[in-house]
Amino acid sequence: MAELAALEDPRIRAVNERHGDDHGVNLTRLRAVAKRLKTQQDLARDLWATDDTAARLLALLICRPKAYDRDELDAMLRGARTPKVQDWLIGYVVKKSPHAEELRAAWFADPDPVVASAGWALTTERVAKKPAGLDLPGLLDTIEAEMKDAPDRLQWAMNHCLAQIGIEHPEHRARALAIGERLEVLKDYPTSPGCTSPYAPVWINEMVRRSTPSTTR
Image 1 (tube, helix red, strand yellow):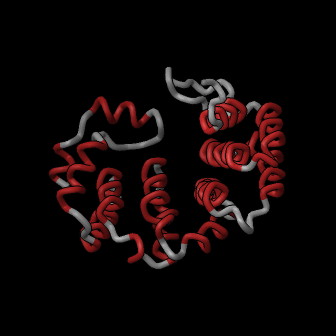
Image 2 (spheres, rainbow, N blue to C red):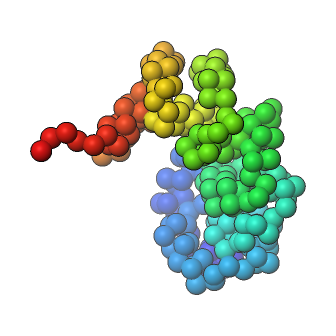
């Protein structure tokens, strides 16, 4: 904890706080600490228990994902209230867990929009990699009906799912584009030069363009 405190940078904290995160540690330096520590499950649990965001991010880098049972992961997700901790928990731990699908289904239908956003994130992963068994038209129905007025983090997760359906599934692309154009969610989101806008129609068209072989010689 002392080492993490020494890595604190007020300028980084100020930037992170604008995005809802409450730490000031450069993530490259945090990853260097994790690389030195290697996998240490007991230490990971101790770090998570501190409730400190930087410590929890480090915990997620050094833990053993399959060591957590279903209820432990559920409790961790419900206690992970900052975006970066939630994103890393899902991406680095839950996705590698044998409980991922069970948790996806449970979180997807949760009344807490932050928890539901985790269910949508895991659903988006399946849309891209394991779509068999998913009701893609049903997902589009839900997105069309609920995304416009959803809380920010849930809206972001639903928008990502919409874009992924349009990118990965040509048979649903026209509808995904039409939903995005009608709802205009994130249409005016500030995007840095060289980055792709999260506005679904732009996102879908750009990713499809990149994946389409050029016919020019």
